[in-house]
Image (tube, rainbow, N blue to C red; front, side):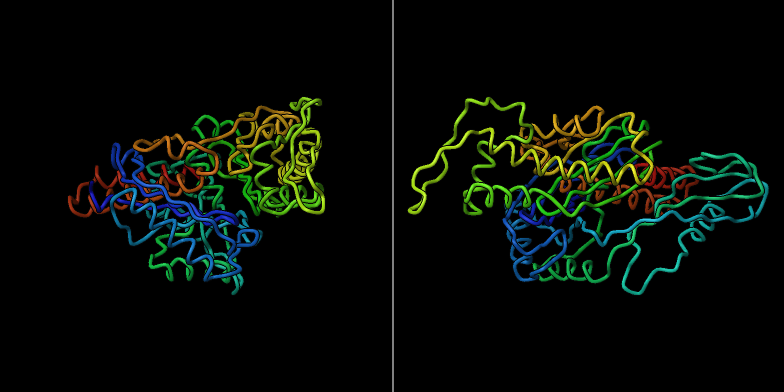
Length: 417
């Protein structure tokens, strides 16, 4: 095990905190992968809809999840890549234009035009998280991915800027630091999930990643290999559980257990004759209900969530550009019937995404939709490490071909988003 190649991904959810520790392997720096070494999980009640509501509770959850992952991996980490989500996340498109310094476009020209596009005024209560080049235009030629070496006099870029609320970000960092770790980088969760579950073809053709968590449902739309839209619906699995609590008169714990054991999100899949027993109470005694009633409650809420997601994608103008369909991730996505209901709502192909891209080692431990974000964060970290290795290699060797390799790695990372 190479300690310099250890990375950790931390997904702090509204219900559970998940940590994955892995070793960066593969063809570095061209195509890095992750050998999964350790996985840790801990319950948390410290988040509300993706935002820290109780720092102490969140800190304890982080500490336990990372400690368990370290124990399984047999190694310690001092920093982690942390997922962030919530309604405070905003994105916008920004354009930059520069005159080319000489006849041939250089890397310096590209850096300048990117800097111009990034130079947007951001409110004092917000911070820039991701600045992702969408495409370049050389004179009148559109859709250029890497303009270096091309001939032209005018270079333009379109950049996707993702900003987050300073307060939620600060509280998240503080909780991680109190647990004894350093935040290497914050990453928007649906972007991280996409790294773990999407194929290159899906991102090229047009696909929506829908991450259905406990507190929120997050959306990322890719088209022509670029991130085109991010969105959040402030509803998730906790709302389904609350409906069961109120609809069947159960405690939160019993409702969660019944949902896990007998729940189905698509009513037509349930046998109308099937009956299930509910936990008995002194006041209510023994009770039995048709399983169809439970499915009806879940179906209605999940249908509402997916319909709100569809509306968000329609308003962004991408509902007709999802040639590769929809990929569901997150804990809710694992429930029976969710994919069938989503196919009905979106009218397109739907699959449930599990982490698989560029993963090895203890893959069986993370092959579930709820681990997509944490696994994606480690893959993001692997790409960052590979980019750093390529850059330092270029400096050490001072060789043009290595420098070009470093830049290609950087471009690949940008292309993924």
